[in-house]
Picture 1: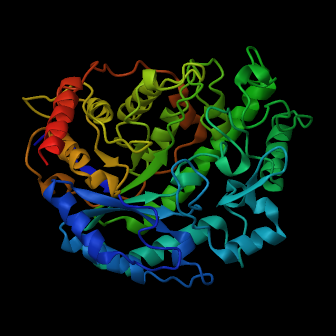
Picture 2: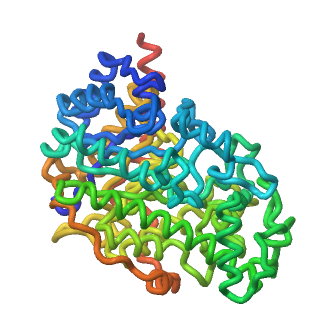
Length: 502
């Protein structure tokens, strides 16, 4: 079973409604049973802060999620639970609106600087600014304390599911869309692909933090960037990202280090709280990193930079994150596993394949588990084959575990479309190939007790991991294919014949 990689399926964003109801129990049970029969290992679900703690501070209502989790357990599936401290709605693929709790938004009505802010002063209420992580602005609590208290309540109310190992993964939301990043490309503010996005550090708290950092570095005259353009610019249209632009100057480098280091520190603090809460349970904790593949082949890596990933040709922006996660015995969950370069915009210098290879190689180099998701819904063989290639880049090893190998994949997402006969037929084959043609095995998702985090790693030690490394070797195609053009042709032929005969 050494080649087996577990497959989970992401549940619909609104499986529990904004009103904290679980309405489609019967339909949902049928779908879960179909997933189970297909050999799926478990499901992933957003556990929305804006639903659970909606009424008032520390008033948590877990009732609908308890119902949902009972049903998942009854169907024999395991659970990856996301601590979703962000708003649902405003990101790519969001079809549901669930804001953060109203009493949190009310604080923002009096002090809008609790939210991420761009240079024009536009506030983004989808996630609290990391500038308020340690400020007691929320009826006496800091942002970190609110996240901590929520996770403690989750642990207390879901102890049955934790103790019987139904819940085996807690992914800790660390930013917009649950990802460790700044909300640099919000559709709600007019961003469209492949815009470079904007820096999101112009709230008064982060502004003050930067001014203090600049003064301590002997440059009190330095300010936050004023030449980085707007959401839908291309790199060369801006003073900051153009060839030999501000990003290459002493001032630009200082800013980018500060901006990206703040993000790593934010993730480190919250993961430390999560580890403290869940240590001893047989689970893993995970952090999600966004697959920002556009402008990857531009010298500036502009959209990665605005999102907080200081990644360049000669500087690895992801391995320091992996090193930080390693101290918490955590898993790095990465997106865009299904994407191939030629499917993407050449003008936007997209390179999802190289990005995936870089991030996964960095995680494996730092000796952590790496998991992944597809960024956009896919039902086609080509998308599945690309995921399968990334899962075992050097193929199946008949003499033991393949090196390297991903720890798991979460498929986005459970929809009615997935259960259409042709789509589900290919999906079932995908599950089998994830398992390396072996039968479903529950033991493959068993985990050891979570250990307490190791001592804090100094930022200087984390930044040693910015040194670039050679990526692991990758085959050009998977040896566990679900079929290609010929299989598609035969399917279409069979479907035509079937429709004629009927």
